[in-house]
Amino acid sequence: MTTNLNTLLTALYVKIDDYLGRRTRTGRPPKLSDAELLTLAVAQVLLGVRSEARWLRFVPTHLPGAFPYLPGQSGYNKRLRAALPLIKQLIRVLATDTDLWADPVWVVDSTPVECARSRPTVKRSNLAGWAGYSYCASHSRFFWGLRLHLIATPSGLPITWALADPKIDERQVLIAALDHDHTLTADRPGLTIIADKGYVSRELDTYLAERGIALLRPSYRNRTPHPAEHLLKPVRQLVESIFDTLKGQLDLELHGGRTIDGVGARIGQRLLALTAAIWHNRATGQPITRSLTAYDH
Image (cartoon, one colour):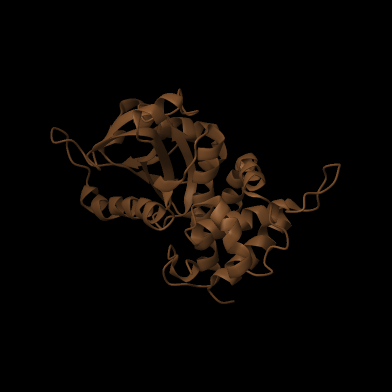
């Protein structure tokens, strides 16, 4: 196997097609299968084409023969939004197919996902009531949108993720994410989660301790430092580098979503692309697990 975009897309298509199996729904099958749709969506993100209309013009020239049928922009958009549950499933399928899934250390953090900037856009947005205003201290700016809460391995493999109103406490989001899927922490003895000071909470400590999970985070000045605290800084920098990959190479903040389903599908599309690249890099023995350089041209 070689590491290039065509090889990744072929392997990904086969993996998705095998997972989905034979179609069981009645009626005429779609001209573009679900496996082709999601492979197409991953290729779009890896190649950095944000406009769906431009992407559908780009494919016949740059990926000739890869997709025998392409829908119009409206049809592609509708199919992609409707595929959000399937995108979430496939992120998990690819993640569990790597040796990184068993990593006993997780990193957790959140990052802004801006959805609008001007006041008129905010007032008429379909995201009103879900998105909101907040301040991001790490970026020293206010924004209107959501926060992406990500639990990942130090190598960048997504374990689970959630989009939430930026005013919701990230400690509560972490508890809700782990409660939503009890299988995540099952059969993981010695699991350690590394976080920042924003996750200081007696409730969170109790919740994780009851499940046998250790939480490591920097201590406040008036607290006794944890014995392993000097080891946290380089690991904490890893989660920032994961977000940097999502934003710098996969255009996380330029998602273009204007509805709840649209934003969810586009964020999921980028996380699926990241997971697919990591999955393929591990399968082909690449030295840098999260490298996307071989797939962006």
